[in-house]
Length: 334
Ligand SMILES: NC(=O)c1ccc[n+]([C@@H]2O[C@H](COP(=O)([O-])OP(=O)(O)OC[C@H]3O[C@@H](n4cnc5c(N)ncnc54)[C@H](OP(=O)(O)O)[C@@H]3O)[C@@H](O)[C@H]2O)c1
View: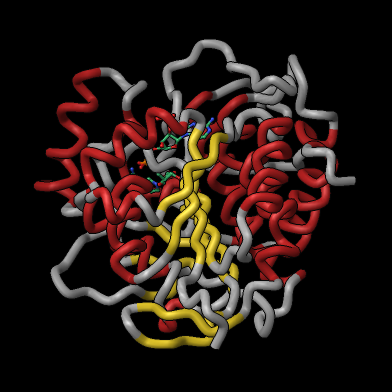
């Protein structure tokens, strides 16, 4: 075995919620971590409140605003230049959700911003780092045991993007649906703001971006053999009290966690969600490509993860191919 026994995991969005709570278990399992955030100073300050000095020494903070494709390119080339070992496990976690917008916010490249951050930024990052990730298979020490670790990419998906689940059919404002993808096809610039080219619906824009995340997982796992890399997604449960909901009305923020805790029983603590993400990024039992891991929508103590059935909108080969090819063009890979 080489002398560097620690594996390297990269995670986006560690200033709050699920990402922040994934750091501790990742470090406990033995990973060195690259934490990608739009402000490293803020990410370090927050990490200092949660982690020990020794833990923080194993994190490299890299600044990337995922809404800006130029930042993604610059940040990824810094990672490739400065970080001397390849990335074994990449976790696409960061996201923005702004359901109250009247008009779409635009990314520096002019795209609707939640699609830009949640899908385009991660899509470009995955592809810029892919060669490096693919080269990472080696023996690393995880939980004190030497393991031949196959490269892995994990994407945070969600129930509201999966039409096969009840939560994916909520009609307010509309279920996730990429339609004919004419919005992407026609360049996705103003006045276009939705993948299907129709009227802007901010809540649906988020759901569509998460649908694109999950579709990307399916397409990547077809394009890259599972002998070389594992690509999968997960739904950690309803983490109803994270900053993701910071742009919802205060009454919603007050009632939603209570509703999830006591009525649907879907509530998951930020800590448990972080633990689940870290395990999917690390443990052998989750090393299955194209699987969307879930612990169900009603939380039960001790329940094991299972492969969640996915809707046609996620697994349909034509949609995933078209979404993938159009996204490649929009982010400037073709
Ligand atoms: N909460 C849930 O119930 C739930 C359920 C299913 C799936 N998920 C998924 O879980 C993931 C984490 O969500 P969360 O609930 O933990 O949300 P959160 O607390 O709002 O965390 C989101 C993270 O993304 C970062 N981020 C936002 N915009 C960014 C940008 N332009 N560039 C770089 N980073 C950016 C945020 O950083 P800043 O501090 O800079 O904004 C923050 O660190 C998301 O992918 C979400 O879709 C959440």
